Image 1 (tube, helix red, strand yellow):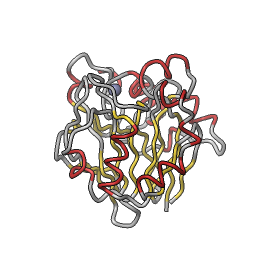
Image 2 (cartoon, protein in one colour):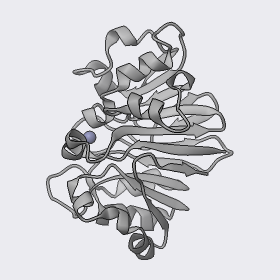
Image 3 (spheres, helix red, strand yellow):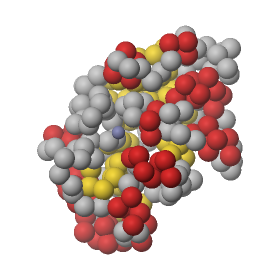
Length: 253
Ligand SMILES: [Zn+2]
């Protein structure tokens, strides 16, 4: 079936730059299709040091939700690694326009290495082998940002809510997710910060009712409040089985 390996669970700048949590993003393996999501700093190192090792040469695609460095730092490196140093034209890179054309984080010399570099847009659908990425809506974040609903008809629908502030439309956008990953940076709601807080993530979980919700991408306040000890209370409050991700966690389905 598949798994998601968390190569990092750091969210936002301070946890990333201090490396209190690693920041390598997530590796999805679904029915033999290998996808990397948001390769932040350390992604390559974390992948090859995983046990069992994750070989970047096996990747079929890379999804970038937005260009902030905690999501994109290793993307050029991972494109090179996916394509065996640019010698093997393969794989699909999905990224917002903003990450490709406006102060781009994906270097132009790397863009010929993959089979295709596709610009993702709201309500778009993109295919990597047997997987379909549906992009529900544009997030509200400092730069152009999207999450996805990932489907192949055989495994549970996986929703990924990347960085965003809270707004009602997120709920309908990600409805139908059976496994829902939410970047939950803040322990408490903070005005003027374009990241989700735990209470807002709980609203989304209660409304969508996935089979499993996975919280990741933690900021400092989540770590100070020892979020890893709160799985049961969050699950009780939401009525959904909630997992608090940790570095290196492998979630199988
Ligand atoms: Zn961001």
